[in-house]
Structure formats: C-alpha cells, structure tokens
Amino acid sequence: MQTGAPDRPGDPPTDHVEIEAPELAEILAGQVAGLRALTTGLEEALSASLCTCKPLAEDAFLNLQRIDYMRQALKDLEGILLRFGPALGWAEGQRMTHSALQETVDMQESIAPILTASKRSIRQTGAKEHPPSHGAGDLDLW
Image (cartoon, rainbow, N blue to C red; front, side):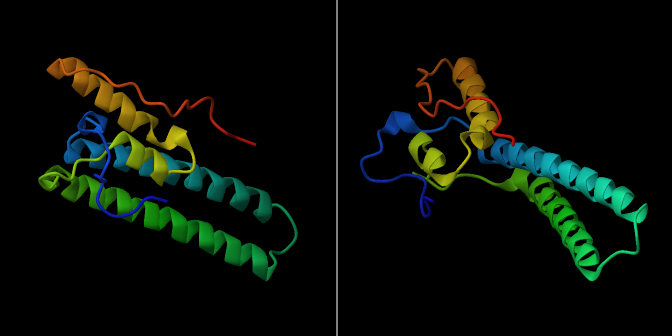
C-alpha cells in the first residue's frame, strides 16, 4: 500500500489525477454511503433470519453488534467527508498521481469513480488525457 505524498520522484508530471480534493472527498463519501447501505442491509437480513430461529447465541449478538458498529462508523466517516471535504485542497506539488492511487488499493474498481471524475475534468479543461492502465473489470463478488 502506497503511503506518504502522492507525488513520488520519477512520476511523470502528466500522471496526475485531474480531480480537486473536495470532489475526491465527495466521491469517497458516496462510496462510504454505499458501504453503509450494504452494512445496513446485511444487519437487517441477519436480524430477520436470527430472530425467527432459536434463541440467539452469544456469538450472534456479538456479530450483530460488530455490524452495527461498522454501520455507525461508516456513517460518521461519510459525515466527516461531506462536512469538511469542501474545504480540502492539495498542497503545492502534492497532487495525487495515477500510479500512487492504483498502488493504494486492492480492488481497482474502488478507484473507478475517481478516474471517471478525472476524465470528466480533462474533457472540460481540454487537457491531454492519459488513460489509466488499471484494467478494472466486473465487480469481484463471490
């Protein structure tokens, strides 16, 4: 996982992802909201199936509490991103690069909305487009 400054020595200057920090925060907030919705659905489905069965074992209660904690934490992260994201900005010379972004994630699909927004920005500004080389395909579901 890549940490530290988004720019690294040797990164070509054209490798920058053309996205402003507030827009990145908004995209991340949307992704967190999607995860929260999945968590809520999982929590509701497990609750419904467990409540119709025998009395719950201690492990079942603990798992439901963990899911509830995860849902609440995701809601908090979404709120932070939405509240403070509009005030974020890149420090001089610290814009995010395609290569650093791709090295940061395990699932390339996670960054697809960011790359899409970057392409929109390139089309709007008329800058030369440098297509990503991540080759993301379909969602990797079981």
